[in-house]
Image (cartoon, rainbow, N blue to C red; front, side, top):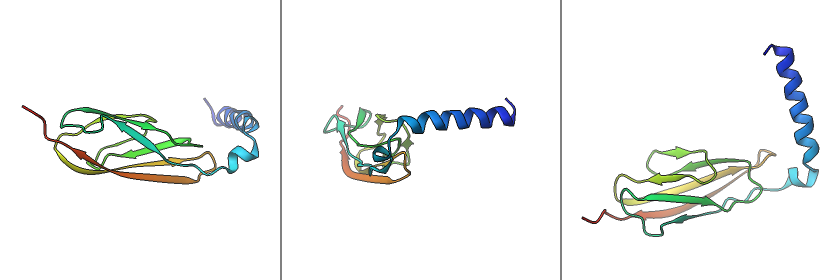
Length: 111
């Protein structure tokens, strides 16, 4: 695709996208919120994080163990027990952000 075609596609996409959004939607503040399951995870368990955010467009999860995700509802398994700070940053279409952090305790795996 040449530069002119790329620009034309970008302009067309922008026109269609922004015509579908009203100004009220564009001005809304995002609200980061999430839950997770299981409530008492053990080492190796697949923990599902579920975004309950409002007015979100982009997601950035930090699981507190140097692992991250940009999925809306990621799954993550911890390799060691301990206390972790999990954070979710959501970005709205207007570029505004909101963050929620929680403390998560991962229990040792039972033998």
